[in-house]
Image (tube, rainbow, N blue to C red; front, side, top):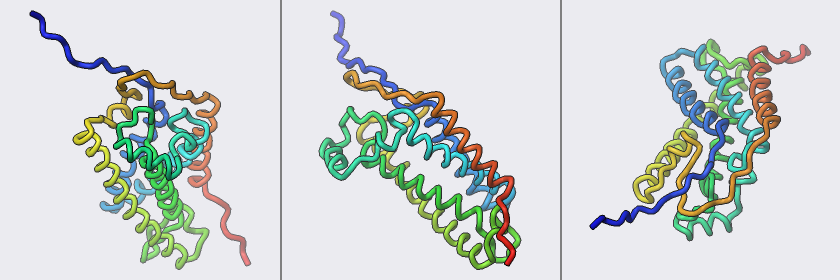
Length: 230
């Protein structure tokens, strides 16, 4: 007698658009490279990597308004009630297609820290005044040192947030048996029941977001006007 197959068929649901996935993995690689280049005193490469991260952050901020449903801030930044409801569901709420209410705020925190990190790096100056950010000529030495201190503090917080992010992924994978990595690679997740389709992004929105990210990098790379002479 044939043994009945007790496996429950799961449906594929589109979750993450390609620009969001590309942003995610480029950011992972660039953050690692920025840390490595700073530790090995390859500051030229460190500056290039920082500029690339700045462009990615500018792109992601714009994409948070014009991207697909799960990429938009309005789609994952929820109030305290939503966070409490998600906690009561013990993380089993399939109706949450993208970031859950807790993860959404961690993404916002990450983007804030990245913004502080990259902007402070533009003006940072080392103690000897030898290595400096591409816009350090716009500030005096003391301000440049303050920017360097902020740059270091922001990176320390970034490492903490990144560690918590990895820990949360492992928790969902091992304890809740939910793989959050594959959807960020393929764009799809497996669900038990059919879910509402994720609102797509427009091509014009993508063009605008890319243009803003590239424009910010070009503006910094080419330099801003220096301070006016007294």
